[in-house]
Image (cartoon, rainbow, N blue to C red; front, side, top):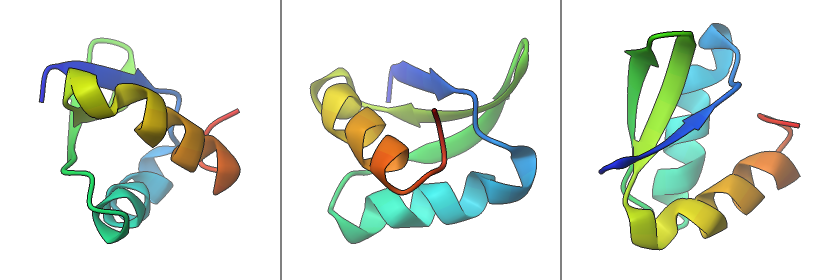
Length: 59
């Protein structure tokens, strides 16, 4: 889990992580320097970003 996805509302953070788990992407929530982040593997970064965008968690 070395890649980061930022821009998620703190109140949606855990739901966004669970949405990724449902499609078999391991993810962790955390706080980065500028706010909430989701961490995923580099291999899953693009797919996770697309899924979170489709689900409305990020723009």
